[in-house]
Length: 80
Length: 404
Image (cartoon, rainbow over all chains, first blue to last red; front, side, top):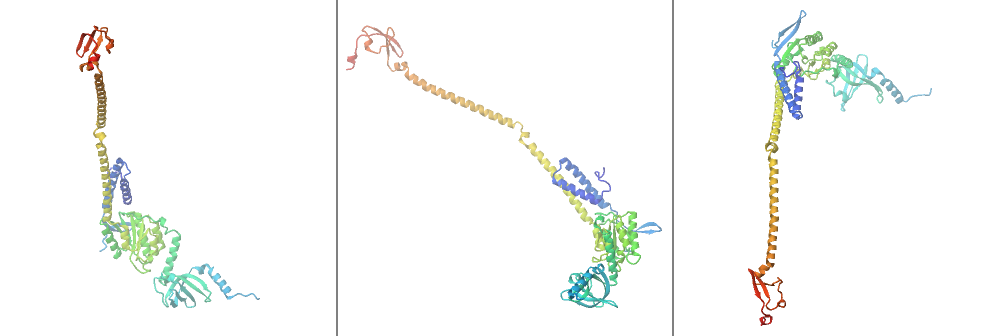
C-alpha cells in the first residue's frame, strides 16, 4: 500500500497526533526491536502523508454565488 | 385604636413589600439623567426622569466601573437594576446595575434579552460546539466581497499558508437584508460541503452596524451548521449573538484568519522535528542493539571457548607438579634419615672397630675370649682382624708385666 496503511482521508490533526504518539512510544524504548521497526515505518509513512497533506492543498481563491438556482464559482481577486 | 407602628416598622414593612416584588427586583427602565453627581467615593447619584415622573438612582462604584461611556446630565439612558427602599432617606430608589445610552440602549436591551433566551435554549453550550480542524483544506468566508475585511483575511491566510484554498460567499453585512444573506451563505456552504470551516466576518462599526449579527435566525443557522463556524465581528470589545453561537469567537476578522490557518512554515518545521526524532530514535535503538550484540560476541566465552578448559588444564598441571614435588621431598627426607641411620650403624659395626686395629679372639669352639681367666696355656685360639683370621697359641699371662 502506498501510505503504509494510512487511510486516505485521515484528518491531518489525527495523523500528526498519531505521529507524535509513535515518536513518544519509540523514544520510551519500551518496544521490541521488531515493533520499533514497524512503528518507525508507520511514523515515516505518517510524515510523508502529513507533508503531502500540507502541500496538496490547492492554491485557489474563488467566490461562489447562486444564479438562477445554480451555484456559480469564479476566481476571486479582492483587489478588483 | 391605640395600636400604632414606629416609623422604622412602617418603613421596614414597605421595604419588605418592595423587595419581594418580582418585577422590581430586576427591571429595565428608560429615562433621562438629571441631577447627576459622581461622588468622591466612586458611587454615582442621579435621578431618572421622563415628562411625568422622576426616580432617584444610585449606581455603586462596583457597577459603574464597567460603564463604557460617561453618563451626563440630560442623557437618555436605559438602565437595568432593582428598586428598593432607603429607610434613612425615607425614599425608594433604583439601584442601577447596568446602564446604556438610549438609542443603542434599546438595541442593547434587545441584545441582552435575545442572549438570555438563546442561552436558556442551549445555543451557547460549549458542549455542542464543534472543534475547528487544525488544517482546513478549504476555508469558506461569508462576508462582504468588497472592502478591507475580505482583503485582510485573504492576505493573512495566504501569508500563513501560501497554498490555501479560500471560497468567498459575498453577503451584505449591515442593513435589513444582511441576516438573510449571511444565513444563505452558511446554508450554501453546508449544502455544497466544499469547505472545512466557515469564517463569518465583519469589520468594526457601531452597535447598529453590527446589529445583523444579533439575529435569532442567524444564531440558529450557526448552531445548525454542520461545518464549524468562526465568528469575527467588529472589534475586540464588540460582542454579538453570532459570537456566542459560533464554535469559536475571533476578536477581529484578521484574528479569525490567524486562528483558522496554521502557519505552514511552523507545520513543516514541526513535521521535520518529528521526522528527525523518529529517525534519531530508531538509529539510537539500532546502535544500542548493535553494541549489545557486539558486546555479547566479544565476550570471552564466545570468543575463546577453550579458555576455561585451558585454565582448568593448567591448574591440573600445577596440582600434578605440586604432587610430584611433594612426593620427591618426602623420599629425599626418608633417604637422608636413612643415611644418618646407616652412618650410625656403620659406626657401631665390629668391622669398623677391627679396622682401627682391634681384634676379636675366639677359642676353637667359637666362644669370645673376654678375659684371661678363660684361657689355658697352649690353648689354640682363632683371632679375627679387619681383613682376615689367623690361628694363635696362648703362652702365658702378661697381665702384670704389661702394666709396668
